[in-house]
Length: 559
Image 1 (tube, rainbow, N blue to C red):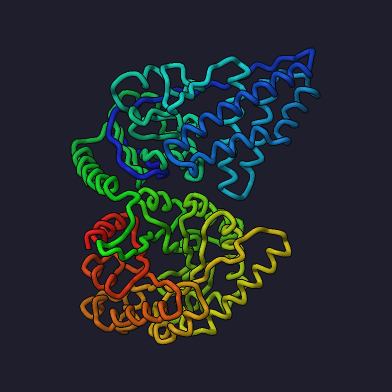
Image 2: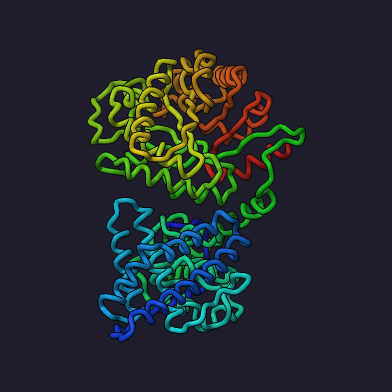
């Protein structure tokens, strides 16, 4: 057995025979031409044909996966129609007197290098897109036929770019595809009935290919690099799209374990098919919004795969915890914007950084504290170091132009803290207005209710914000005076305590008195033994781990 570690881009397990797709040679001959105008006309005609092909591909994807997922091919069409792109190609033809194919290839390399040099990982991923659309134009110029069918499936052996070969679309066997790289248009045209999963040597989690793989429900792993070996063709493999692990020629123990996991996943998928798109609503008509908690942008895929209605808690501190230096505004904007775009119209509630207590970061240079859980953490850091806070707020506001983002403030104990935070937010808004940068002027602001003080002040806090979200982990800790990091206190730290449940009830009642909604984003939200209690108390929203969404929806719908 050979074990390879790659980067997870689409969750799921696949077990099957490997089919290695040979790298496609895009070598283009450089020819000198006598009539630059005629060559420009060839380019324009080929570009128009490519745009029409992308329109057909876009319609196919929209019909199968929805308008939101088809937008990337609108972006591809816009790339081809961009005046700077055309000017670059035609400039090369006119100045160097080269053939259109070579000019398109050269322009693609220039634009790809420009995207790859950008700080934003999302923009870096666009390098693959500009190469993809340019290859399409080169194919037209070289007379290679496009395979886009009315139903978007792969047709026969002669597939666009030669990416699917050797009758893979014709025989009855399904395969795990190994390739050096896959372009978005290639991925969109794969016959899902014949493809079990994808493994590539190159690529990124931010690429449109990765997003398409998630949309298609294909387990996918990228970034295996030099471990890519064409000799794996025909061998059995297991891929774990959650961990990024690939096992070639797996031993019997590995096969047995992954068959068990796959069976569990298929049972979960059966539940998904039964409940997908169904409202989270009791038999009596009580509606509850069911969201999911995430820690990283890549987790958004699991939110969509498990049919959550939105993200109720994006723990933004992980953008700080996983770095050795301060995350810049651009880095954070990229992360928040990526999630917002992937979620479309679904809400994305992002908690501002909750550093401190059990989450320490060296470059924050926080002093040692005898009791950090009651110390310098979360909103207290933000309000005393506004230069850090404002960088995050600017990034959040900028990202709000790309989706349905809301901001949530943690560890609130007073109305003044909320007002101080809102003042810094207004400063950030004013700066962005002055810089003519778009953002959602009416972005919602909420607070986490996780201290007894915030429960007691809930009526006053409700007048300041748009929503409450109860963090039951810390609320239990502070209500019962039990350090949740101390294992010897486990028997005393009972989250089912009447005191904790009464705190939750008081918070919900205060929210409703003031016309705002109240949710739960702590671990208790997924505790099925308390679902009946939360429904009786009138909870508006529950945010849980992605894999808890469907079991919870099932319980609520049967209530």
